[in-house]
Image (cartoon, rainbow, N blue to C red; front, side):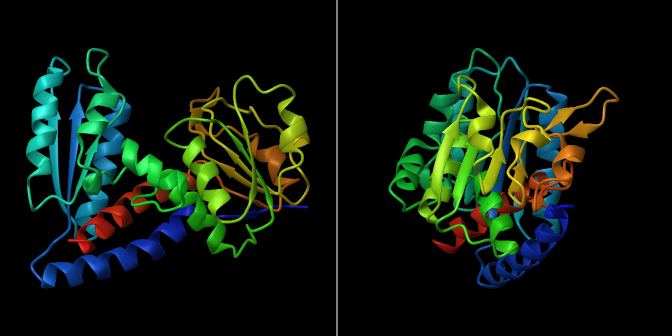
Length: 281
C-alpha cells in the first residue's frame, strides 16, 4: 500500500481563489477586508510566519496592517494598540503573533481582542461557541484540517478520530470540530499510557505535538487518514512533522506531507476567517 497525498498547497490555491473573489466583491462595495498583525520581539520563526501572512493578504485582495514592536514593549502598550484596532472600522481581523515576551500575559492580550475580530478563534467566547457547536470563528489550523478531509470526501460521520495533542490552539478545537462533524473522538496527550493502543484504532489520526516521529508506522491503522500538524527539524535540518512520514506512507490510506500539507492551509483559513468577519459587517 502507498498512501495518497493530501496536497495542502494545491487545496490552498483553490480556496484562495475563492477568497480573492469574495474580497473583490466586498471591496467593490467599499468594504475591503482588513487584517492587522502585531509582532512583539525578534523571533525569526515568528517573523517568517508573519511575512507569509501579510504576503497572502496582499495577493488575495485583503488590506493588511503590520505592526512590529520591540520585545521591551509593555503589556499596557500592547493592550492599548489592540483596543485601538478594535475600534478601527477598516480592520476586520486582529492577530497578535504568539509567543509573546515573558512579561506579557498572552491570555490577557487574546481576551482584549474584540470577539468579532478574533480571526485566530482563540478568544474565550469563541472557544465557548465552538464547544456548543456554533463557532463564530474556527481556529485556523483545525479549520484547515477539516477542509482537507472534505477535499478527499472522507466520511467523517461515524469514523473514529484520534487527536494526539491537547493544546488550545490545535488539539482541543480539532476534537470539537471532528465531534461536530459526527466522528467519535479520542484525545491523547503527553500523559497518555500506551499511545499506540489508541492510534492503531483511528480511522482519522491528527497528530499535533511538536515531537518528531512520535507516531511511527506500527502505530497506524492500515488505510487510515493521517494528518500531520507538526513542524520540526530532522538531523539534516530539513522540515519534518510529528509522524514518521516514510514509514506512514506504506501503511496509511491518505497522508499530509511536511512541508506542503497543513501549513499552507493554516494561513489560507486565516484569510477565510478575515473574509467572514468582513462579510458580517
